[in-house]
Length: 110
Image (spheres, helix red, strand yellow):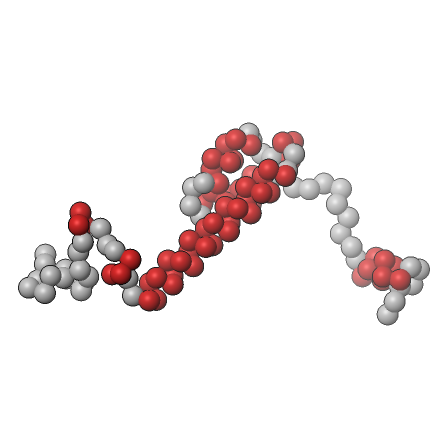
């Protein structure tokens, strides 16, 4: 319900067709919106890049389905990183002794 000031009960001014304009948002709301959009695009870009570079045998399910799923807001990219990738096998994890040996040969630099 609108009041005499043209605003609804929450203090917001309505626009055509019940939508809100960018100018209706406070600076904090605008910043939050821009931040969430940037995070979404960053996650989607990272997920699509990872999917494109990953061989099909290292993907759980068809790549085309994952490509489509990644487009679904935050859920798609997060699902890809959590469930879409097969775990890497045969990757050596360096230990403290390995780092020293690589840094300067036998015994390493310390």
